[in-house]
Length: 203
Length: 203
DNA sequence: GACATTCGTTTAATATATTAGCCGAGATGA
DNA sequence: TCATCTCGGCTAATATATTAAACGAATGTC
View 1 (cartoon, rainbow over the protein chains, first blue to last red):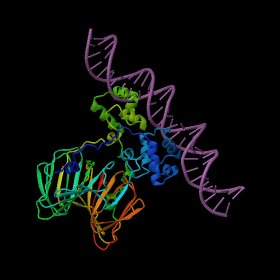
View 2 (view 1 turned 60 degrees about the horizontal axis):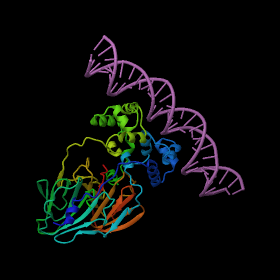
View 3 (view 1 turned 180 degrees about the horizontal axis):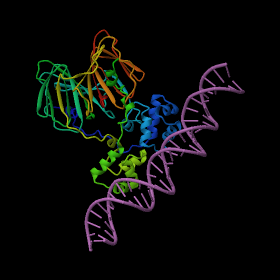
């Protein structure tokens, strides 16, 4: 079993989220409003408040009440918590496409390809996994909190999670909590291809 | 395009009818305060507000400003978003395997199967998507914050994200922020199969 | 019983948020 | 040029949140 695999399936704690401060209500609102192309008056009308309120909130000259902030956010299809956790500053790459994937574990009979090459500042990590006949990851020990899911695209996968073992054929799927120990094996005759995703990214 | 698809890819506007999106500020606060065994005055002192404010907020006779709610919550080791999403986490199934997937959009030329049948209390939503030739989701209105990724398993997918259009062949992948408008089309001759994942789940 | 303490609530005064309406700047057309 | 939009910001009036200080009810002590 490779170190790469260990990390890929949840062995690293480098991903941490800081939601201790929730400032910049005005900046968030302005950013969101611009994304939708609304004017202050337009949003005010949707939200049932006045444009002056929107203006003052965006300038952070007032701290809106929960109730009125909720009214304003109802002008968008977005929830309060999503608004408060909205990523605003990082102008990172928001779109990725193509074959340009990073090879995670190239040696041996297991191959992982990571969608998008990096996971930093991302919430999901998706892998394209290829298991040759006989491939075995060994049992993973626990890792940080998170969840992991996948679909078997072709071949046959023997999956052991928390003492429970199942055989998954093409078209079948799994979902488990990353805290549970887990093991992937290909005991079949042909290559097994799996698409998996976990959150948060493990490296 | 079905309603199910709209929700699956982020068009759910159920936020608009949310009186229960962030209700019970008072109830939440009281519950939290009791959990820590604080009296109203004790919490008020920690938070830098008066006991009267705590009392009125708990009775939901006033809607506190963002600023003062934040001050109050600073009296606890809890973040604003954690406070707003405070819920009893029911014991749930932590492992799922097999073909037992829920059909999301059965009608038309698009088929979605959801891994695990439910998304409640889960962090990832994985879909097995089948697009018949000519299938088109149309442009999605943007929705809640989150991220979305996928791999094309077979066939050919035309993906438009935020004004940028790309053609993805089998083995290629995408990754984008759910806030961006997006559209999936199969302009090829054969069926297109995609495995996608998004976080958080959209329904 | 009399007194002191603490609890959550209430009330009048004050601070702040929100409104309704107006302002000047920039665009658009006739 | 002039008129007419819409944009975001601003100000006085009003509504609401927050404070400071009281209240009545429990509880405990001497």
